[in-house]
Length: 105
Image (cartoon, rainbow, N blue to C red; front, top):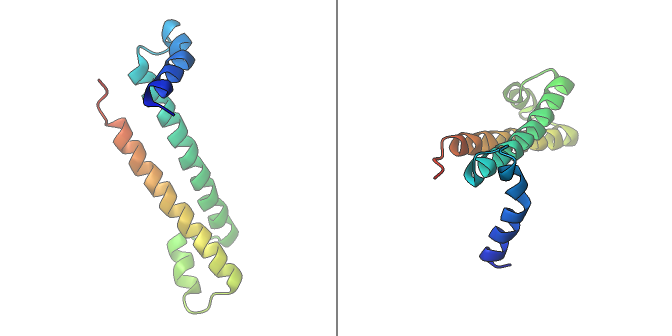
């Protein structure tokens, strides 16, 4: 897909939002939509972390210490899922900070 085609499609899709003054310009609109998407990603991973914290009544760090050297297969599976959720949650939070502080022209 050509870049010009992508921008043309975006302009057609977003034009009503700009025309109706829901956003002042395309830069504000894109930044807001990106933040909404990022927040959804953060919430997804936060829920996974919270579900595992509730299941084990421990934080990830506490769980890591508790199973060290004696984990079952299920513990290890949960630990890997938990680690991924924590890592991706942090990645999305870092991305959000970068986007929030990015200057738009």
